[in-house]
Amino acid sequence: MVRNRRLLLEAATAAFAEHGVEVPIGEIAQRAGLAKGTVFRHFASKEELLAAITLQLLDQLVRAAERLLEAADAEAALREFMTDGVELLAADRAFCEVIGRPSLQHSGVRDTIGVLCVAAEALTARAREQGAVRRDVTGTDVVLLLGGIHQTAAPLLATQPQAWRRYLELALDGLRATDASPLPEPPPDRPHLA
Image 1 (cartoon, one colour):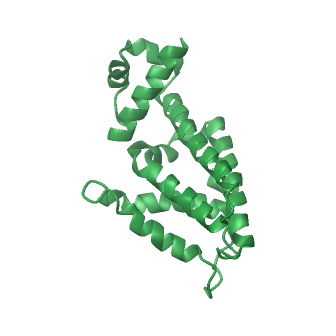
Image 2 (spheres, one colour):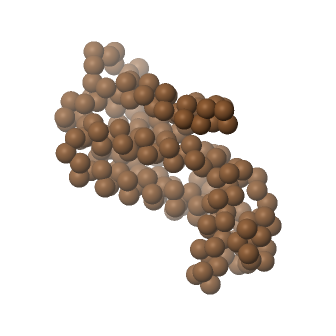
Image 3 (cartoon, one colour):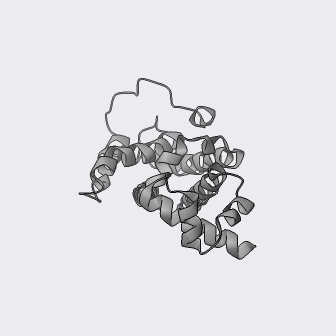
């Protein structure tokens, strides 16, 4: 039972990352070496399967943020978190497609996005305290920027798979503590993100 679930998650993660969320359930079952009915014994719907995969990715980002909280250089830690985050998104075609789907309404996904925002805020707060980033930047801003950077570079991924690095640098420059003008709108809070 646990083995079949693991096989399904691995096959679905790979299929969705390569081809997006329109991959048929039958193809996922075939990749896993299981019957199509096995998919539905573990996941009531394709949305539940997508939510499970989204949770894995979000958990990976949360663990990265928590690990980086121990770094002495808060600016380098925030940079590494954002680099790892955008790289993870660039390698997974389905993730940004999923975030706008009903799987986002899955309570586990919403809760984990909240945990991610809290972890990103801790990283960002340390960078603010060290004077490395603007005082008006929040962890939620950082989380939203991860998706924004990926979406900006997404049309180029087929021909320039590393183009996201250019937009990451532009975003990081915008985060730096400089003589920048105050941001015109208040930061979003977590409930609005979810």
